[in-house]
Length: 430
Image 1 (cartoon, rainbow, N blue to C red):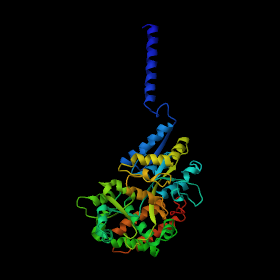
Image 2: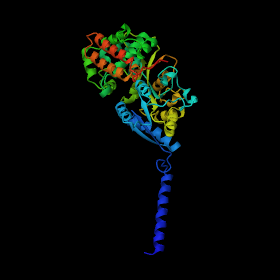
Image 3: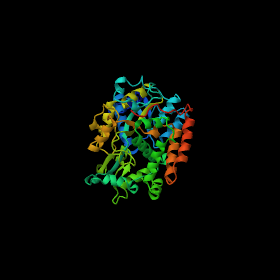
Image 4: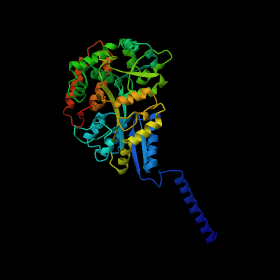
């Protein structure tokens, strides 16, 4: 082969490679040679929720050129703990437990966000949604998503029959209850007890208990447990112990529903067969021994925290907590089954759902009524797990007073008062 011919083939090959690169650029691929780096994110969102969140992350990549490596898992606690222990944590993790967030912050695993998130972006959040180890300490997480608890779901057909809800609520057989959720089974029971204490005693007592100040053996705490236990007969309790919480929810709108009410957070609506049939009432007055005039509300959040301080992680953190990103997230999913709600007051209500039920939830999350974080989520991890197991143990035989269980929980509370690596938050209500 002549030198001229070889030279011509080489030129053609080079031109071909350039054409391939130009096609890639034209297609909008920012993960290759144009990339401005990458950032890893770990969160609990999978299935439809995961797809919606990935769509938001793709928007971030198109705007910035920063590639996002997202891992969604239902075993977030176990995966994160393993990665942190091996020295390979994600850049950003979204934690549903402020207690675990506080533990990681205490262990110096997290980057304080005060210098990462501009103050103008933080003004949309109340202090409740930006956890700290102490009242005036650094911020270690910000709620990028929120949910409302202290609510009871039912078929809106009951609205046409006055007094029906109260009558149904007094009959323990009418509650759809499931305690199962793999390694975290029992948390629906802790939600009941927390909400009962909040509605019976108010936010000050609730906060004292949730931050480790009020003993588990206090009569007011015992009353909440007994109110819960007194509602269910043996058959209902037995069914609850052997039923996954998602399966319990599916019963509410079955063809021949065996139950009519469900005490569950706002996130559950997306799992109903037909969400348009679902209505809710606030739990005070429907839960046993509670005053319907109570305005306190239990809430929960998903808190973004930064485990590795890189320019890309900082840029994504600023994006995730911004009203602009959350508005985009909400409007991309507002007419679908997965409705995200936000604590950020800068996000319009019409970006958080497409009907009155969604808007009522969104308004409550930014209302003037006392809001308190889920107590078990805010407790140190060891306390939370013990609480979940005790709820299961009590439901297995509510004929026995909860005193023995409460004494056991109290011993754990006292042991944790002097444990540095599992701190209690200073506040959970705001």
